[in-house]
Image 1 (spheres, rainbow, N blue to C red):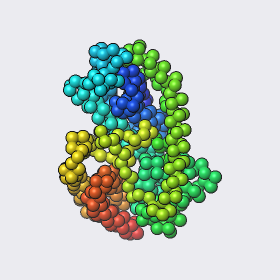
Image 2: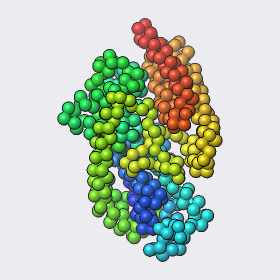
Image 3: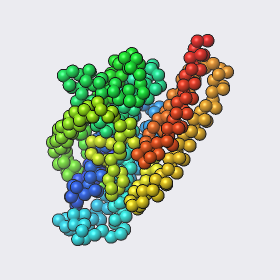
Length: 434
């Protein structure tokens, strides 16, 4: 059974985001950056609510550490929405409803103080939407059931490649899994795309032939659960979150009024996205025959902020930690005409992160000698999984550096860690054989 506390917390957060979104719509145009980032955050929270209501979601397991991460981001997001409420209240108090400062920004510019507050709120929207999205997507990908158990029996290289291309397909709409699965030729058409991408990742034909069915089942299971697939917006339980400030009857009625039309909006976005997916899928299949897939997707960026979602129903595949994000945002905003300077600074940051994960791998490997003495096969499995989770996957998430010409910083360490993992696998096999 899904955790009631998690559902209640995310439900309250979703109600607050909906209320703020409606308040923003009253005082600024829907194309304003402020309104668009609020819309993005709202859709991210819809997908989170959809995930936590699943009984077998990892976010509902008491022993899953991501529950604490989710709690941290949810609390921060709620504080951010409270700041938004205070800012919006000032806008309403000081300016007439029909001539809002945000609607007539050219004629009535914000004061320096208000502009700084607005920029901070927008950056926080991006930050929390980004991290909550990553938690949601990873939780969805880990709930693929028996298909994942089959993939786990294969080599680490295959598991890593399958996860990589599945995340890439879903995050970038490079291939629409749902569209291909619905094709008259079904699995055959989907397998053409998947096998082609896996070959680009270095997987041999013999391995693909051996694991064809588990790979297909795993990817389709991800597609059926992931936050990127079409979902209906969850009903807003207004009574569940009456505790916080800004729960005025005015805002509640506005949230209820909007919810009556939410399905229409969701339907329109879904139809538009489906048509776009079909066109991009056909183009991708044509291009892939000649050029192949790109090894890493490019990152959509807004020239004003440096980071934002290109579409409310799409999130970044690439993950960067808070300190990195803040530094990049600073350089993209303050020094847009000095990319060499920015790259030098970013290189230092990525160098530090890569070295941190290399040190973490060495620290984990210090346990190997005791495992050899004890001949503990189960502990070997735990060590391998821990290195994959804490080093390989973390390094793979730092992909922004690839687009800035910094791929070598990660690749050298990833190759080294993969070599270590291969040695550990061989050592485990020797122990199993006696």
